[in-house]
Amino acid sequence: MKMVKKEVIFYVLVIAVITVIKILCAPNLALSGTTGIMAIALFAGLNKTYSIKNSFVLPLVALLVSDAILQVLHVFNMFPFEGFYKGLYLNYLLLLVLTGIGILFRRAGTPGIFISALVGPTIYYFVDNYVVWAGSWQTMGYSHNFAGLMDCYIKALPFYRNSLVSTIVLLPSLVLMYRWIVKGKTNMAFAE
Figure 1 (cartoon, rainbow, N blue to C red):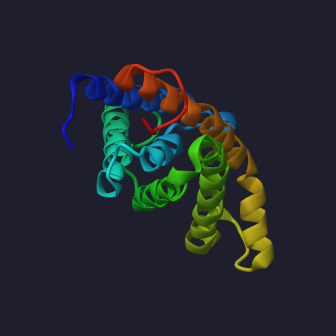
Figure 2 (figure 1 turned 30 degrees about the vertical axis):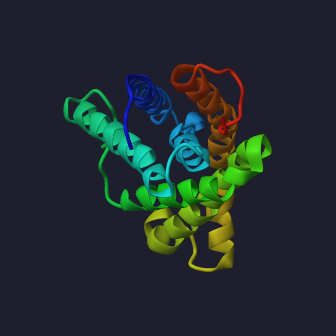
Figure 3 (figure 1 turned 90 degrees about the horizontal axis):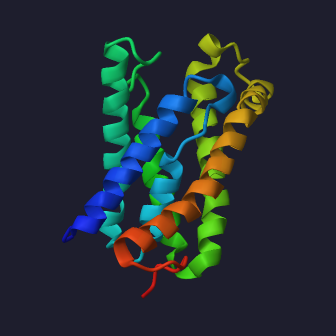
């Protein structure tokens, strides 16, 4: 994948934006789940100018760089929690799933952008919270039965709401920003 100057500028902007969103929103429980990383994963999958193999690069690099920045800030007591923590691998795996969802919606055009913005965070919510419940039910105070699982899902609804809203807003914004910065166009279509 040949990188041009405009693409590099776009990638740097995207990584900076999601890192700033994490720094501002992650420490505030009411804003937990407000993130741009789901939108980036879906964007990379939806983008027809990327090969399927290369679609997975941008979201993984974006998450790795933003997590590394948070880790450094944490080491210097400038951020309340680590960027690299136990169980982080799940975020990377789910990011790959969201990129795959974007790939599945590539042919759906502009409606696919909005459908994937709903489907991606929903799948993330169900899988992530199931894993939290299954792996940490005792330390999190959930019972290890269906009622405990439902309690976990209910308590995570604010996270889901925030991730859904941020993805619905940021995914079309990323598409427009990419089209404007890299392609010099102002529509939502990835196809030329």
